[in-house]
Image (tube, rainbow, N blue to C red; front, side, top):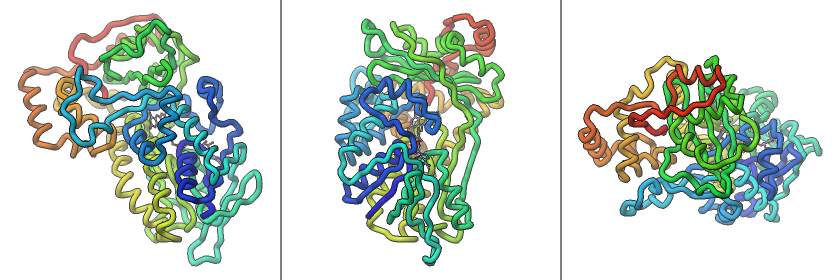
Length: 476
Ligand SMILES: Cc1cc2nc3c(=O)[nH]c(=O)nc-3n(C[C@H](O)[C@H](O)[C@H](O)COP(=O)(O)OP(=O)(O)OC[C@H]3O[C@@H](n4cnc5c(N)ncnc54)[C@H](O)[C@@H]3O)c2cc1C
């Protein structure tokens, strides 16, 4: 088939690569003239990407990213490791890994800035003879044949002229213009489920100095208070990010753009403080991002597919608030399905089969994010007591001591099993119960500043480091 992919981000490049390797002729249109190359720092820190504003934000790459790349494009994964990506198994928290159970080998976070993945993907796509990358070429509209029984997308208009295709893949990200173009062309709107999140993200990047160890050892990655969360993203090449999240209604949030305030506040969170205690140099300013939503866009309504010849992958299909790091796993899973099935179904059947699979397989993760965001928004906005779920807090603390419970926690966090299945076994329930019995009067505590301290730091621009000494609950 001749396939046109709109967008050369993570989804578009992966789609092109996997489809090209299955023998399809693929053209990728990417409007940005610049592309990820081998100079990771220049590409990451100096490349202004208004079309992909999240590119500078830290990305935790969960287990499905590694597993799917190892299955579909092991050369890309190998290139990521060569470019400096690290691997962190969830059992590395313990001195020794527990006796192996099937699937344990998957529970690995890939530690890398997203540019490492983009660079490895671009290089592989560039080498793939079936793939043509057209940088600096914007798609500007859809070509639609209305003579067919259902409107059929037959290609795209672009800044370089029209391009016909047997299949168009929309990988234009969360701001993709394609759903709007389609609605205009066929007179039926895609079905969009959308939830605003009300959470603002602030991050700053740091580089460990040569005398610093690789990482500070057994340190939790994040912690939360009633109104904020602080987390660390160890990445490639001794670079790490510290990230803070607050409610968009928090009046103090603007102060976090000041690097001195950001850092003083970050040092009051468990985990962040440990990393910032290592010899390091900051790289660049504080980066802020807000205005995020959870969005599910379906090209099938109650009457069936809106058109044939068009599928959306990645953020244009399912865009999730990043608190659980689901974006790249969902993107790669959607791409994998399309690559494996593009040949197997035709016309309306392909669109319907993809829709059914996505609703059954990806939508539950979207729905979980929506539910979790509501709770998170209420917590950050002070509408819910923090850590009110004592059982969940105890389970999280128990996982730090009991590898069997850690396994369940990792399966849920890495989207390997739905949380209700991972945690719902008699084994896990009895272990958590035993832990609670051994810790009577367990009192979950936030691992960050009091509100008073926070306001003092955000208004006075002074440093501080007052770690809470009670039992800190790790952020899930
Ligand atoms: C703050 C933040 C933090 C995140 N953190 C994580 C995380 O920790 N872990 C995780 O897994 N995910 C995370 N994500 C999500 C992740 O970034 C996305 O899921 C992922 O980028 C989706 O890839 P994509 O290819 O669909 O879109 P993108 O990567 O956005 O790529 C879309 C591409 O399409 C191009 N394009 C758009 N329109 C056109 C056009 N008309 N013509 C030609 N080209 C076009 C754009 O230039 C861009 O290159 C985060 C997102 C945000 C917002």
